[in-house]
Every structure is written in C-alpha cells, then in structure tokens.
Image 1 (cartoon, rainbow, N blue to C red):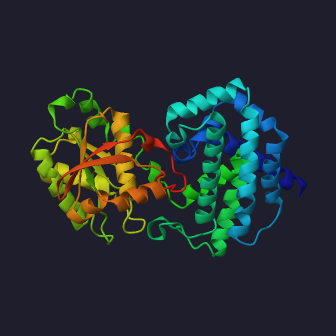
Image 2 (cartoon, rainbow, N blue to C red):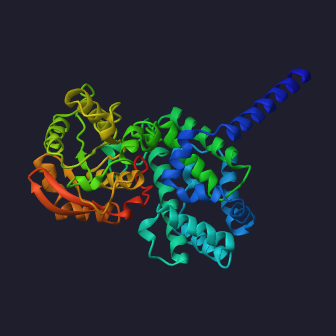
Image 3 (cartoon, rainbow, N blue to C red):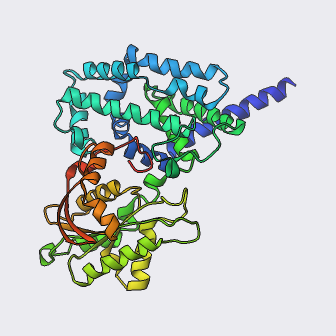
Length: 411
C-alpha cells in the first residue's frame, strides 16, 4: 500500500513538474495575445525584471497576493464566491494606484517603463497626463477591466451588450462552478513563480476568456503575416498621392441567422463600395466587422466580405485589407484607423467610409459622436464632407490605439 501511495506521489509530482515546464516553455498564445491587447500594462511589467522584483518585494502589494492565495483553502459554493477574492474594489484600486505611484518616484526603471507605455500608444487617451496620473489611470483601467471579465465570464453578469457578448455557459450550473474553481486553482499555480500582486486575478480572467471561447479579439492574429500580408506588401509600393483618397472603409452587417455568411446589408454595402473603387477613388478597400451576429456566429463579417470581393468582383487580394474584430460602428472606425497607421496608409490623407444610407446617416451624426465619447472616451475619427447618402469623408485619430478592456472581445 505504501509503495502504491509513493508511486502515486512520484507520478503526481512528475506530472505537476511537467505541466509547469510546458506552461513555462510553451505558453498559451491566445492568452498571451489577449493579455497584450487588453492589459498591455501587465505584459510590459512582466517583461521588466527590475520592476518585477520591485513589486514582488513590496509588502503592501504582497498583501493582495496573499489574499488571493488564501482563497484556494476555502470551498466556495458558486462562481460569484469563487471570483470574489480576485476582484478589485474601489478602495483596493485606489490603494494600489497610490502605491504604484509612490514606488515609481525617482525610480529609473519605472521611468523607462512609463516611456515604453507612452511609446506604445496603448493608453493614448491619457497621453496629456503627468507621469503620476498616467500610471494611476492605466492601473485603474486595467483593474476595472479585470473585474469586468471576471464578473461577466466567471459569475455570469450580463455585459453591456448582452445579446452578443454574454457568457457561453450556464453560470448557475454545478458543472460551471466546478470549471471556474479549477481555473482559479490553475490561475494561482501559474502565478507562483513570480508572485506579482495582479497575476492571479489576471490569470483567472484570461482563463475564463479562453474557456468561454471568447478569443475574438485575437482570432486572426497576426494579421500582418496572414490575411493582410499581400496588402501590406502592396502598400509599400503604392503612390497614395495618385488617388483622391487613401482607402475605402466598408462597414459590415452580420446576418440574423446561422445559415447566411453575409447579410443583405453586408452585400449592399459591398455594392456601394464598388462604385467608389471602380471610380478609382482609393487604392485599398478595408472591410470591417467581426464575429458579431448572431450570437457566437462562426462567420466573420470582414473575412466573408473579402471573399465576396475576390470571388464576385475579382478584386485582387493585395487591394483588400480585413479588420475582423469590430463589433460596433464605433470600433469599425477605431480599428480601421489602427490598421491604417500600422500598415503605413497616410492618416493625413482623407479616406472614405461607405455603408447603406441609414447606417451612413448615423455614422455622420452627433449621436455617433456622443456614443464614441461615452463608450470609448474619445473620437476615433473626424468626419468631414458627405459625398452621397452612402459615402462620407473621414480622417482617423491616433488616439484610436487606446485600449478598452471593458470590451474584452474587441479592446
């Protein structure tokens, strides 16, 4: 009997050791990319050994680590109780924010980190803030973003857009409680090596996104090496001054059933965009739209629009750019701007946005501006002249790079 117990222990330890080795050597790429897109601050911190050591040694911050670790010793009854120790209260956020600011004072490594964050443009909407305020705001945004993910995809809280962003499972079921409890244990174990105060909470949030199949934000990454590789090569040799506009952005429209790959609105929008393209208004078409309607659809609006342009209209792949992540008109415009900057399409040259008349009317309205301000915190684009009931001129704003982890499926 003792031999059997010993054998079990040895095998168990070997499996644990192997699991840790695999986790260290072969990290989950989806979770890595989700972290970078939603919580770039944490990715930057984890890649800076000096900052890691500074934060790890701080007793005040370590108290939050200890609180989360202690949660593994209890037996919560439901997902709400499981995630509770990993949530960040208002007072916690304030206390950690103030502590981070204090630790950063006069620290050369923190100064380098802040410059790296500013250079990344991932927090461009905070660019005018002082270093202290900048750091505090970034931490505050990330902490609130963690809470959003944990509450929605851990406890089943209804998200702001409940029809398209909700949890994938029954949060009240015993099976899901068991799954969340297991993911919590894994989150803690994966954080033991560095023991950074935010890692258990971050790991659990990423585990929940991955387990719920909520990888939409990175599903087609890296775009520049896959779907958009041909267009990027063409951009490098394009004389944009030879065209009135830099690009034509086509807004998507998902179908309302699981049979159709494109909705009637999507097909109409492509026909309207082809008028502008045939007139040689711009050298590139940017089709924008993700996996949105219906809920958990297998079809991506941008991918299907690209195929339609190639198959039905004969547009060369090198003239088509996909933006496969946007879930709303606000992020259609924001994400298109991001790609234009990343790929070298000039922002100082106007582009066109094309969609059906009703949608175009909304895109050019004050209501759209208000929604951008309310949901994004800034204006991703400047709308200029209306050329027709379906076509508007616009220029993108660099602030569009600002992350929004409160919408983790397209931050």
